[in-house]
Image (cartoon, rainbow, N blue to C red; front, side):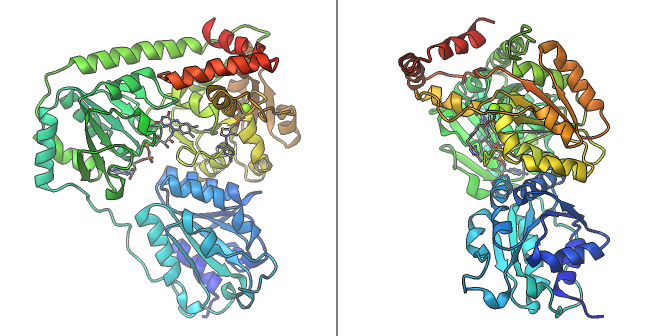
Length: 574
Ligand SMILES: Cc1cc2nc3c(=O)[nH]c(=O)nc-3n(C[C@H](O)[C@H](O)[C@H](O)COP(=O)(O)OP(=O)(O)OC[C@H]3O[C@@H](n4cnc5c(N)ncnc54)[C@H](O)[C@@H]3O)c2cc1C
Ligand SMILES: Cc1ncc(C[n+]2csc(CCOP(=O)(O)OP(=O)(O)O)c2C)c(N)n1
Ligand SMILES: [Mg+2]
């Protein structure tokens, strides 16, 4: 029996294991959505904004490691996908975007809604092609799928509505193999050199990132042999931090002083599966060794003396038998002790505070951390919620943590939570949302009811774009354009059919969070938090010091000296 290109398209997706497509429908997508309606194996996940669809697909791909799909109709529908796709591409998660196109005979005429998807998606994809002839199917789609999976990133298939409705030239998908799982490991010769370098070093620090996923026991064994503290990069937190006696926290602007210290005071830095981007936090003198699955990553962030291409687990398994026990322990013990103190200091900031004052956001996250399920999935918005997530959420090997860590886009937490919840219906999914980030894609709050997704949203209501305000202060600029005039988000949530709660005072935080977590359905908890909860970088440079005093001067000149006092009170006089 003959079928349409759209039917073959959807059948090919199903053959590739795709279970759902996130998107917003539209005329040019009708062929595809109608084929999805009739294909039992694939669900259409209807959201309110295409950016949400892309973020949601990215979250699903991150959590499962498998291909996820989103779709937008021609022109504006495509364009709305882009920011979310950038995030997926930068995070190296396999996502296919179906970008419907205007009627094929109108292309090039500046037709209604016309854009050029091949140009638009070029920078946020490994593969982006237009299907203009039924003969291209299913091959082009299969190449797109293979590329997204093999290179881990975004592929885009643009398809005009009329082409989707034409008769297919072929009747079924062509590819029927299981996903390849090659073992990637440096050569014997390289492993010998690497072992020699490590066996000769004394003060070794490991910087471990997301590329260490699935290699926890090998990483811990390695650190034991090398007596090396392990610093993690943010995306590595969920895979590296737990059950780890060598853990000394994170480095970077949001990091811990112990992470910073361990990096800066080593003789040899061993980077494993990390693309930690901030060059100023790398040691200047140390020997640097880097192991990464991708050769193009070597030396990207720091000068590298020894670079190896390998999968973390395969490489460490082959390396470990060649390593001698390092007998120098001082570097490890000092770093771990430093971490213990830093951790204590951070924990002491997570206090309830006094009634009548805005609540410390640290306290909210610490409480949430205690109350959440053992296998909860957290998403955190870009802004101060990223700081609180990095510092106060405890990972355990089962919990997951998602953010827009590489692309750094606001508004990620809610849409990522939608993808996480829809693809993991039994799991507790919790957002740490900024009031700015949350309101940016707030329309998709409506999707929670429609999709029956019991996501729990915690809104940090500081009535400002606080992270930017902090950056402005640090740069010596008077903050401007950062005020948010917010509604009562809890009442708004109630109006939308969610459970809406407000924790006005510190003693209301725990009961409100508990009630939301126990609620059988979506819930929103808004918490007014202090605006100037300064999170000091682990080291203050002269430049930054200058910035702060300059701010004070300007603030006085502009009649806003009270803000610096507020800042000091919150941070110094607890
Ligand atoms: C507001 C904000 C502030 C931030 N501040 C900080 C901060 O202070 N500190 C911080 O650490 N981060 C911070 N981040 C996050 C930061 O931007 C980076 O996204 C993060 O540091 C990267 O973490 P990663 O190296 O673990 O992951 P990635 O960037 O994803 O790198 C993973 C690496 O592992 C490789 N890889 C993948 N699989 C394998 C495998 N099987 N074997 C070997 N290698 C593999 C990849 O090729 C890649 O090079 C911040 C983000 C935001 C939004
Ligand atoms: C799409 C986008 N726009 C602007 C920025 C710059 N930016 C980074 S954090 C931030 C403030 C976030 O505010 P909010 O969500 O309220 O979190 P807060 O820092 O106040 O806790 C802004 C504007 C960005 N990263 N992404
Ligand atoms: Mg805010």
